[in-house]
Image (tube, rainbow, N blue to C red):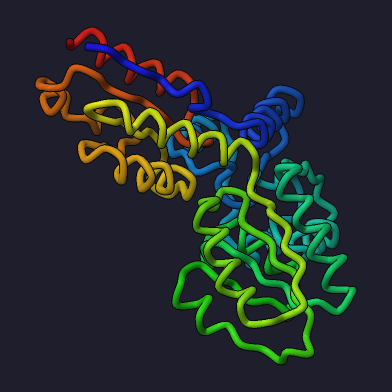
Length: 284
């Protein structure tokens, strides 16, 4: 069996940076309680390992308000400004692991909001990254995630608009939704804030999936970018499997195939990718 592994599979720059920061804090601050605001990344294996090392996850503003000492690491997805304010009020140490590409969106949103533009965020409304962006846009924003929402978008034509995107959104879908909104005749600034690593990962996944008999996509079940990789691969290869670890893969389903592709989301550690690769190679 031939196995093709995507060169772009696994941790992206922002995720690796965030995870490394947490492990650095564990190493350098023994005896102090370390928290992450939300799971540091969307991968249960990583989050469980950090919890085993004593790191606690804060799941809400209410929880955060109750904490009076310790270190809070801001996750790679970023958070709204109010979270920074609470951390400062409670005099907690902050370690900001927000992906620089996400931080760039926050800065754009603040600037364009102050210039009087209505912010349109192309992305998944309930995704942590989008939740954070909304917080910086305050109340003057609209989230658009699909065709129906783009069609329904309607504000005063006198209002200028700035469109940004969730960094892990599907590039082709972003272009399509922007075109739909642009037809409405608004004064629009469009800033493609999809991360280059995301675009490269999606392009490579599509290419590999079009050339193999079966495709394996590895990532956390709550990972937005992994779900998009799965959707892209499924369009090209009917036998596409979405797994978190090797335990989720029924290897018997690969018995009749001669070529398998493997890719992984931005929050998938290399050791999990290697484990899947090794098991598929040994089995066949």
